[in-house]
Length: 74
Image 1: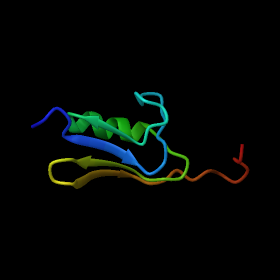
Image 2: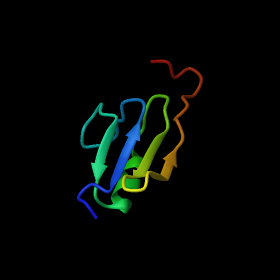
Image 3: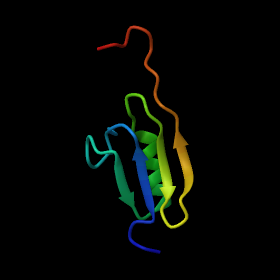
């Protein structure tokens, strides 16, 4: 295994308390559990977040786009 076997990615900028690079759209991680944990605790405005196993291209985790509640337009 290489040092970055998993990639957290989204088509929109990703944010979150544990996200290491605010505003980026992808981040490479060597550990599957860490990648899934970071993805689960992160969010985007209107885009799915995925964890991809880089060597195979398999999507190992998906977090659906977060939909705002009515009246959340801020």
